[in-house]
Length: 318
Image (cartoon, rainbow, N blue to C red; front, side, top):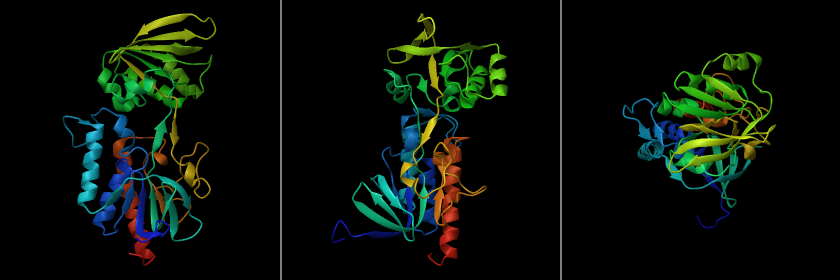
């Protein structure tokens, strides 16, 4: 193209490159939609900070998260998807074709857009936490993903909402003991979830408690926890720490145009990936706060590609 300000026109633009984005690209490329996919700030998404994935079908021995995402990308490329480095920085969905700005400079016009920008786990912000999460050192933001690695061991979980309670219950069935750390003197979780947790023999709840320090070399060995009321510090030996304080969907740039819930998850029409704007679809963790698994994200990426293909055909654009 002659100038950097010239607008590139594409049939289908996919924003994001986790299991949802790559699966959408595989299906869209096979349907001859010539999809262009921009990988975003973290190509491969949350699975790039997951060490081993044991629960994705088709990998009987398990697979490293980054290797799995490299294979998703390879498959999308082999089908003919145009996979690019780049980050969507601004959008204009006010009229068709839809406009998306990449890296604050280049604009792309697309007849249809699939948003698969994912969600980012919230961390506590304490030393060693994110480093141990990215190296398989025993810190995780997903009990369902990683709990099975700590079968029969003592673990800790931080969080006070329904998700934290659900994850504590899940861990209690696998682990010998679950130390549940609650920052305040009460939980945010629903009454029924609180009652279940408190009635479970191997979950010990610590009220008014925060983590003072993670004791770890390559792997987590114990936690120093502080009681906010008494200032007393206690050491708890654990093999893992699960952080369950929520996720932030990566949806800010779409806010002026796309309907979202109060926490920023994109609202899709039931049984579909359609948003409030025709021709714009959302798949994966940016619209799924319930399941948040690689396999469900991939499934919704497939749905988004099929929805986009039908839309483009009906409009006579494909």
